[in-house]
Image (cartoon, rainbow, N blue to C red; front, side):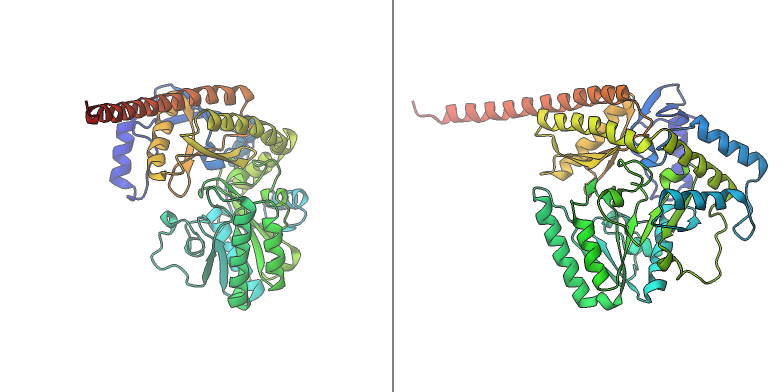
Amino acid sequence: MTPEEVVALRKAHFFPCTQHFYKNPPVLVSGSMQHVTDGEGKAYTDFFAGVSVVATGHCNPAIAEATVRQARKLQHTTTIYLTEPSAKLAKRMSELLPAYPRVFFCNSGSEANEGALVLARRHTKRRGFISLTESLHGRTSLTTSVTGLQMWRTDPFPDDHVYFIPRPYAYGVDPQEAAKRSLSALEDVLREAGDNIAAMIVEPIQGNGGMIVMPEGYLARAKKMLESYGVLLIADEIQTGFGRTGQLLASQQLGVQADIVTMAKALGGGIPIGAFAATEEVAASLNVPSASTFGGNPISAETALAVLDYIESENLPERAARLGSALKLGLERMRVFYPHIVSEVRGLGLMLGAELYAEDPTYGAMMTDRVLEEMKDRGFLIGKNGVSRNVLAFQPPIVIEASDIELMLEALDAVLGAIEQERLTVTEKEQGGESEASASNRQP
């Protein structure tokens, strides 16, 4: 099908909320590791990975074969029947993440966060939650309520027992000062309503919020404050989890052990799976009979086992840290070369963002769309996020090569260079016009 035909079908049959990035979108039909190909045979290097999902690569043979083998044997039962893959996956995850020996499998990040919030309520017997402004935690009932990004708060009747505090970031503000302001607000909320709050939910790196990394020491200090009021900490690792930031979990990398951790995206390598895991003490509170129709089904569980094997055998966390340093250095050079365009570079590992025109984010959003379009035409797919949608998002498959990063940076340099040349041309014309006006106003 042509792009026009696909767009027409989407317009006719999708809900109007469903959007796409490009003015001239390709129809993607195949993928291999860090590359995808469209219906016309054009290849692209993927620097977005389906929003951090295919961390182990598109159609990775080591993982796809495991998926196919299981699909030929047993596709689905449900959790009320015994199957090996989900039991083996639970054991494997507890070995990799010993702080969280208990796990509940589900289908998505939204469902994982929803389950974690319900678990917190059951454990504490309290109703309220604390969340950060500009956060994103999902599309279900409670997860929409604790989401701080306005564009994602689609439920017109969110839960009214949610307390938002400022995220520990503001453009141009020292990170520790921003952290201090956020922690002060946290203390105020705890003093006011701590005895009614079940948990605080935090993304170690706010992905859709613009690649905002929690400042050094922030999560540890927040955890200590929460503990004094008996409030749990939920680490939303949906985007950050399983090696992307340089360690399996970004929360532990940032110096904190949460009470509950949520996971999805990279865990399935493209096959839908979600999970929330907890300490023994907290997990014991989810003790009423329950089930999950699709959670941890044989195909998703067997795929996740292959994903974890690949992450370990290929040492992908170390690879993400190493290649992420190279990518971040290249983006920082762009900030130095084009200071009027690139305002800030943020992130950890291979979860990076470059904000454009922070002083004029509306214009920055227009330029972000232009950069995405031109980079696509040059064979590179990158993402966008941020409060104003003016942050270029770099979340490639971790299997990406250093040469791919170099080629992408060369293309990005060319695109930003053209924008900078246009800016200089306009500035020169404006200054020339002012000079001519001044000359005409001079007395003879």
